[in-house]
Length: 257
Image 1 (cartoon, rainbow, N blue to C red):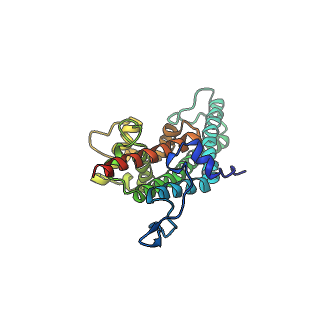
Image 2 (cartoon, one colour):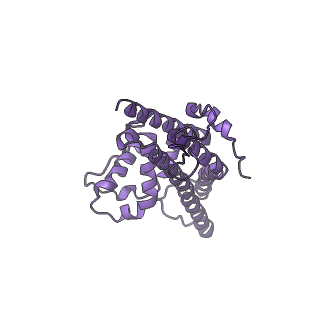
Image 3 (cartoon, rainbow, N blue to C red):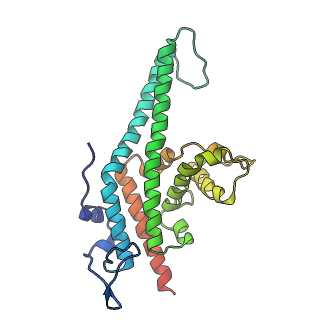
């Protein structure tokens, strides 16, 4: 059953979004009611409206995304169950490089391998959906408040020198372009931007030859594990903490101009 949609006030309160602590009101500019770049009525300011839109988008997607998140976690248990079944068949811990024993039930063995591969693929799909969603809403917020690339990379608590938004962006690029990475013999500067973030966060060094083929698998499950601790509300907190820090960073820049 899908999760209940949280109220707007609940999201604002539990994430301490100070800019939205007071109600929004229509804004008049040049004698007309102001609108955002999306054509919506502007509330208080462009920054306030951007955060208001981010919260609304998050909460309307909360039931779907939290359900997908739980499905992703279930695949971890399902994979462990399949591995245990393989262990029981062979009488020794499962490893993918061990050959098929003569005394095994071949049909059961291959059915269990299929089950393991299904949940692995499913985990990548579920995590990829969440990653692409986060990349889209944070990218939109960044554009709405006119944050710079430097602010995007250096804002908030950093993980291995990378910001929350930067990590999500790199993981989303992995989702979109993994097949391209797999057949890339000489990585482009654009590809390396994402791969270097992934290598830093997952602490997987780049090969000496600079090949990125080893990063063409689904990295989103591992990335979300690090960012969420397998807790969807922690992922929510990280998302809004980054957004608030990004806005604060941009406000400091504009105040000094």
